[in-house]
Length: 125
Image (spheres, helix red, strand yellow):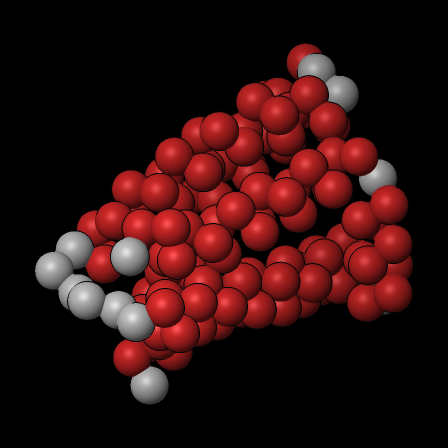
């Protein structure tokens, strides 16, 4: 139960930062760079924020390996579901259309960052 609660808080905190950064990426960076370049600039910033948020969230908590992995897994699943829902609602894609985006380099780089985000609770605990 603790992993679900921590994973949800971790997801929500990082998602809020990521939503703001994503807006800046789309409005400022993508027109200046291509999409891959914009993601490459944004990724270290969001991963740094996720690292800090994860540390703050885990401070003083002793998690077992399974709790830490569960925290990251819950956060990752919530992130992927939210990202797919926003893609469908805001961009009018189908779920299959959203999944097809992962064939593009920018989305693959983003996915690598999302996997790192999910591993931070294990690394930091």
